[in-house]
Image 1 (cartoon, rainbow, N blue to C red):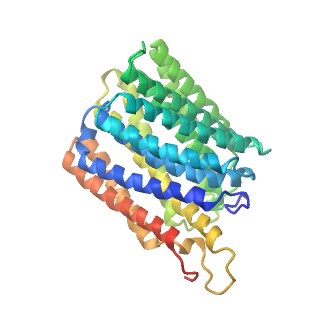
Image 2 (tube, rainbow, N blue to C red):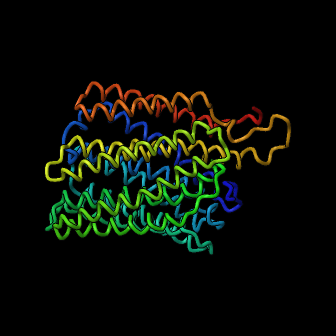
Image 3 (cartoon, rainbow, N blue to C red):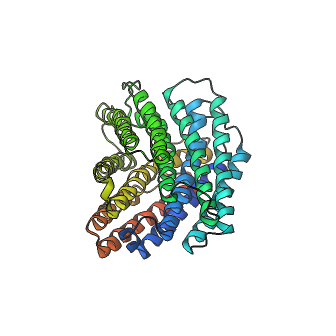
Length: 422
């Protein structure tokens, strides 16, 4: 069984800043959404909504994922991170590029700053991708999770390339393909190719470990890997060739891809030895309800793609980014970050009766309140989008802001604790 403990793990000074800055970016993002909640009632191709979406995907999700991956990849593949210097360079360029990109879009300044920020972001993603690919190639472990993670990095690089092309096209138009259609490709390369395949590759290792459930076969996940990549390629071709038949094929492939993974997670949960599930894992598992609802919404969009309602697209993106991915990250933060700090600060302390454990580094009460406020807030946000009701959205985002502030408070509690006893 894989354990989070590894002598190959990089310094906590590489990992912790990703969680800290990522959580701060997350707080700012929710604040922007609270103050501009009406954006979710309009068209998704809005410069301010695009700015916020990239702040979520780059400043929050990708930043925290980068930090978590630097800890998990050496553990999963039993090898050292290829380069800590590349990790630092990627982190700094990601933050600079994200905020320049955000303000460029927020103030509708689609000129040189936007292009420069897009190039900086592409370089950051490329540096990260090279670092992880080199790390994986150092390992002799042959497992399906390796292919999922390898594939996700390739899609991340493609996402960055297309994003850069789109940014240049906004400033200096040269594409013959519809910008809006290529934006869909960019979004799905990022969401399905990068985020989802990475999450699958990591979760099929971590979930069985945390739930003490190790009898599920990973062979059906080959279907997930095959059809998710096939669907992305066919989806891209459907845009280039203007083919609805290819679009239908891509959608069906995506649904087929998701089913074996959801089956794996469900049976991992049902067959677990550890019957009592902690609040962090509950939040992570609850995120799969959101992806199931997002799948239903996407099916509705697919059935009516000639007459798509904007609220459906906004709800789909919200459920995926704020519901599935963000809930999963916030839950898994308290399974990984406390262990990282514990390994660095407390593992080597003299043994005594009240020796501190990773679970003692954060407040379970705060985590519980965070869980409930985030869940209720997200339900209200989803309902507000569905009903096109801004007051409900404001209440929902207010609860989300409370939840995220509690999340940040617990993170700082973990990284600043100095005493060596409970």
